[in-house]
Every structure is written in C-alpha cells, then in structure tokens.
Length: 265
Image 1 (spheres, one colour):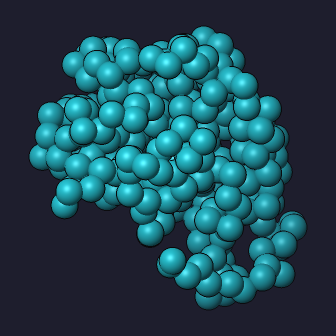
Image 2 (cartoon, rainbow, N blue to C red):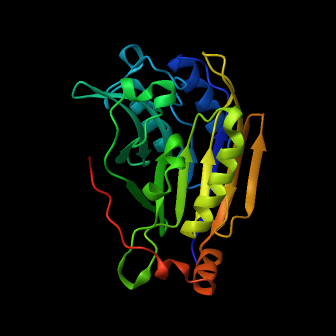
C-alpha cells in the first residue's frame, strides 16, 4: 500500500510583507530533514489575511508564484498554500498546488468570510480541486470552507469508491473560534472517511487578532494524530493507505450516502 508524507508549516506571518514571509518560509522549508511529498503553508501565506488586495495582489506570473516554482523544484516537493491573486479585474483568495515540474493547479476559495468583509473584496470560486499524488487523491480547501460540509462532502463515484482520500484546509483561523476549528476538522474526517489536515497560522495579525494555530492531522475515525497550539512548528506526518482502506471496508458508510448536485448561483 502507498503512503503519503505531508509537512505542515504552522508559523507567524509578517503582516503584508511578502518579501519577509517568503524569506522566512524558504528557510523553514530548507530546514526540513524528513522526506516529504507535500509541504503545506497557511492561508494567504505571503501577506496574512488582508483586505487590501488592491495593494497586495499579484498575477499568476508574479514574484510569489515564481518563488513557489523555485522552491518546489529545488526541494523536489509539491508546495501548496493560498495567496492574493488578481485576474481579469477580479481578486481571488487562491490556493496554488505547485508541482516540482512547475505544473500547477488552482482552487479559488468558495466561501468568503463576510464577517471580516472578505466578500466585498474577493470573488468566490465555483469549482473544487482534487489533486493526485503517489496514488492518493487530495481535496484542497481554504479556511471558512470548513464550516460548509456540503462543499467537502464525498461525491458519489462508480463502485462506491471515495472521491478523495485526504481533505486539506489552509487557514488564518482566529483563536476565539478555535474550538469550532478543532471540532469541525474531526467532523469532516469522520463523515467523509478520510484523513483531514488543517494548517493554521499563529500570532497576531495586523488587526490585532490572535491566532493559536491548532494545526491538526485527523484520521478517518476522528483520532487526532497531530495537534500543535500557540507556537510555530514544522511537522511531517506519514499517512497510510492501508489504514484508510481498512476503515472504509470495515465501516462501509459511504455507500449509504445521499445523492446530490451543487448548483452554481
């Protein structure tokens, strides 16, 4: 059975300082000693969760994307996280899945956090992204998406197979609502019979909002394999396909799911 090694980077971010964040993250990635397939960065890793896209947005040919290409190629890893992108006169909170070959896929955050005004500045995405690596299928989502279980729900596929094996959330999730973050990560794992990886930032942002991190890895039964609170950490975890398959075979709940279609507005 194949395995999947994932490295989570839980870190403080320099507020709206792209150069400082990229330099800091480059050092953290270079210091990773374990072999890993994928390195996951927090939401808006180059700026923090900013509502000033007019000053901070880059194109898909910009410096941050070029940096992702360079880092992925140098370390032979898949690098992923979200950043502020401008495209066709719209701003997106866009997750980029960067391969070491410079090939990439993207996901635009579907659920914009109106409580902070994100919906006033950014355009929501309409399509999910399920990537593949080493025989694993990975559903990639962003922060507030976690509160909407239908968007993460396993879609029915032939032979009652699961659509994906790992659900990833990159986030800037405030400490005040950390209890919801932790419980919902476990809930998404249990209901979708998949591993769930949540990568959050730590520290205060430019608005004085504190983030406790609480990055987690949860197995398909809801068991917590990794959890780190209040401090920076770089952690590599290896997920095992045999464990996942055994759980799905022992508890074949996905075959009893509801059939549904998500309609665009």
